[in-house]
Amino acid sequence: MKGRRVLLLAAALACVAGAAMAQTEWVGDPANPVVPPPEPGAWAAERYLSSVLEVNGTYHMYFWGRDQPGADPLYWYWDIGHATSSDGVTWVMDPSNPALVRGAAGWRR
Image (cartoon, rainbow, N blue to C red; front, side, top):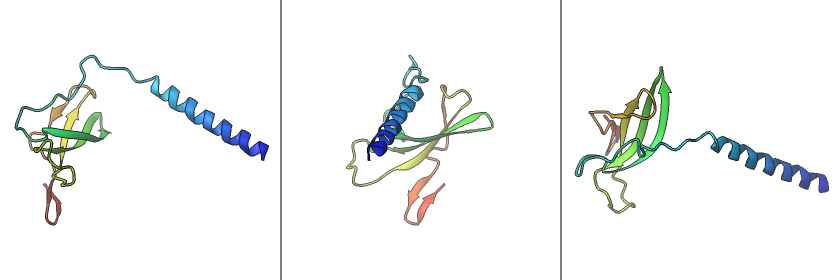
């Protein structure tokens, strides 16, 4: 029983140490936010990052967005937006945003 406790404690400490070390690589950007808010009334007046993928040296950011900020969160009027970057700092919004919109039969372009 004592050996099991020691093993669990060692595992917990290893996880905490690993998480702390991973966070030391992050550096704050004085230009935050790197994706500025849109113009009033534009699509994605409210948005949340979903994921960033790197493909052949270009970063692709996909995010949830909606044009009804403050709308009841129980009603999901969210679409999916897209932006690209060559350096992960300067982002260009896809001019055809939203990239995917919700519909009665599912997502459509």
